[in-house]
Length: 102
Image 1 (cartoon, rainbow, N blue to C red):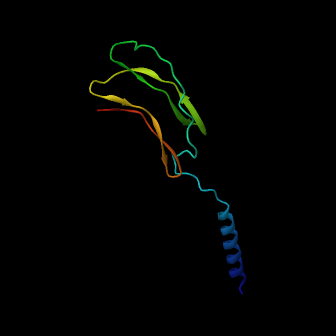
Image 2: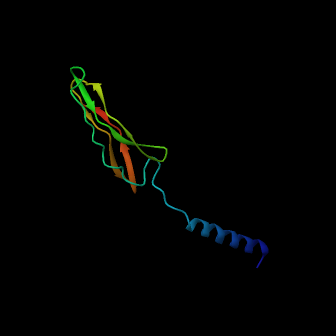
Image 3: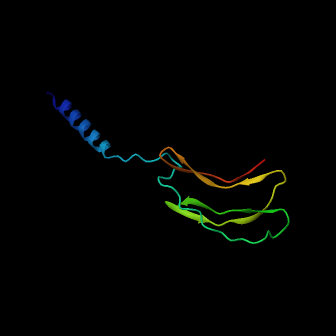
C-alpha cells in the first residue's frame, strides 16, 4: 500500500472519529430548553383611556432567559395585542414576538 493511501485512510478515520463526538444543536434562533413559567405581574388601572397592558415575557439574551416586564401602551382601534409566546420548534423552543392583530 502506498504511503499517501495510508495517510488518507488515517486522516479519514480521524475525521470520522472527530465527527462522532459532535453534539447536535437546535437550529439558529432556537433555544434548547423551555422557558420558565411567566412571572406574575400586578398592575392597576390604565394611566389613560384607551391604553392596553402589554404583559411581560421571557426573552433570550446572553445564553439565558431574561424577564422583560410588562408596560402600558396606547391601544390601536380595531386591533388587539397578541402576546409574546414560545413554541416548540425543531428540537427546541422559538419565541414568537408579540404583535397587534386586527
